[in-house]
Image 1 (tube, rainbow, N blue to C red):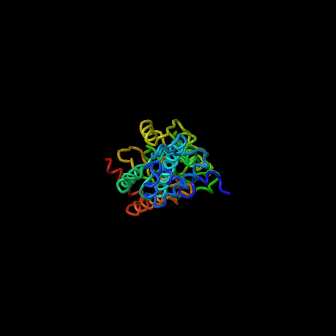
Image 2 (cartoon, rainbow, N blue to C red; image 1 turned 90 degrees about the vertical axis):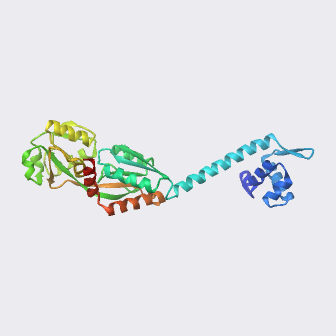
Image 3 (cartoon, helix red, strand yellow; image 1 turned 45 degrees about the horizontal axis):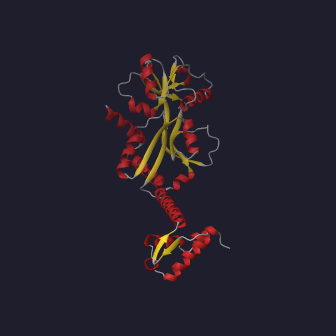
Length: 321
């Protein structure tokens, strides 16, 4: 047995009702619908029986809509508006050239290449809105979990998330940390052992930041005391500025150093053994099925096929100068 809702929405009932409410004439409405007048009358009476009240009434030869009919008309318009909105949202979510992409980027990383790509991407796809958020690692994982961002750009490996099953990653570039000091002896060196970086205090990221924890773990694995931090900043620019002004040591990603090393007094060398990690996209697995997300990744791959990440970093540096 059909439910009341099924009786209301079946057999184009609402379409018939709307057409009659618009024309207020059975003969004209039936002609526009391509059905006979008796068939239209039957459908309207069926709808009236279902809702339990007359929707129209006649005064002489003129048809009028009842109070119940006005209530049904308002509800029907709301239903159609809701369906239209849902259709628009579905089309937007399944379109490769329309919609919105929310991106969360680790606030401590160098983003010039990402920004340059987004400028180029917008010029190619102006109907896709890209929203970029600079976030802490905790904020990134929280927003990924709650589906508030579509894509994260962050460093890996990251042991702070225990359940990787819903997620997937795509490598952007290999990264490594450089030891930066104003010790003139470093000018002739390419590498430095961990224990030789402890002669001076450091300026670092805060304790809860990924790179600070990653550095601490690297020193622990080498059975060496972790560096003593004299100051902490969340921005690599502030870390570099403070290190330059105070002659403290620090460690920063190679990408940041390559992007901003012109004019710096400090010397940068690689750790021995190297402290290496990845810059990567992280996202929930189902996001790849959304056409605009898939298109975004393909365009970024083409972008780095033309020139690799580090080459673009260096070009940004020269352009700024």
